[in-house]
Image (cartoon, rainbow, N blue to C red; front, top):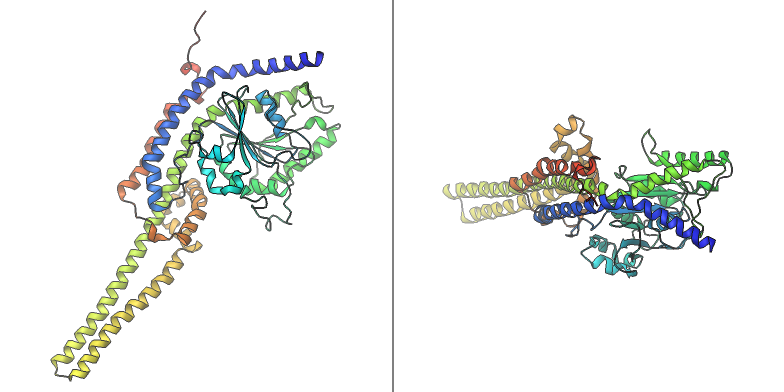
Length: 494
């Protein structure tokens, strides 16, 4: 009886704490839907048609923007991800345990009834915006599920729980494969990270950042996601001595320093989560409980404020898409121009060779040379023109292979953006690094022949999105994230 009362009281406290987010979130959700519709129209009317023309780096799907804000949880197995999900939702949504309890990506969404659906159903539903996951194949869809819950505190937010990260069976990160799980685990992780508005990466005292998949995720899947990423050292209530805490914290910082190439380390949030049946606050003999509660509340705030982060992230997503597509298109245009120039030179030199032979043949005919000699010269003229065509075609194929090699592509990019690079524009170079792999793969598989050159008006439309549309949307949505509550609906007085 007492245990039940304690549990009810704790649930009531958490519900009361969550209520302070509801009014702003409802208004934010309305504005977020309006913005999503605007940005989705930009994708459908401009970005995707141009992307199809140039076989660009954007996903070949109209489901570009998920339906709700996404909070993506990563971490080693037994790092407390599932426990944190149960805590923040106020319900027992995920199974918890010391051993790995789930090998799937679980998408947790608010809904009208409690139900569980498979990955294929989630991907096929256009309302959720997860259609892009279909490209990872049926083996992955068998490791994807969706839980719909109608009684959770995280209204208007999608939580994505990932499988606990483990050491790869192969030795060394270089020899490991992203398909050790039967599907492209790092590719899926990168996809969710790009779509997410908040990323929480959990570590626990036993494995402070030492697993192979953890290092791969930080160096590959989470590249460029620094603004969303929050590092959490969880379960610090397990430490009985401050010395043990210091060693674990130092080990985590050391491991992060090896994969994060900058001098300033990201903030490490140290916290713990109630995990017993009564959700009683844990205690740590070496760290004050108030500090743990304060840090945990900060992490909860990050999750609950995901709708506000989504506003910026959606606009940034469109801006990045337009920028990447613009860089890709300019590179394709330049390559198409070079190929067309080589083709014109091939035909011109072949025709000139044939014409020269014809002129020589005509000269022999005029001088009264015998028919046999004149005929032989005519045949040589035709063979000369054909031979020149074959030679230039062979040379052009060699040149085409050369200009699509890594060094040549990088040189072409530096030529196209020499002004920006000379001014130290790191952003445009980061865009090139992001699309280089996909552009290279497109050239090696599909080839330039299946790409169209963009007109100036089409390039101008992409530039207009970057220079006009995105800044305008930033200004229009500024009150939603500035802390100015004058835009919020007023409470009616009783």
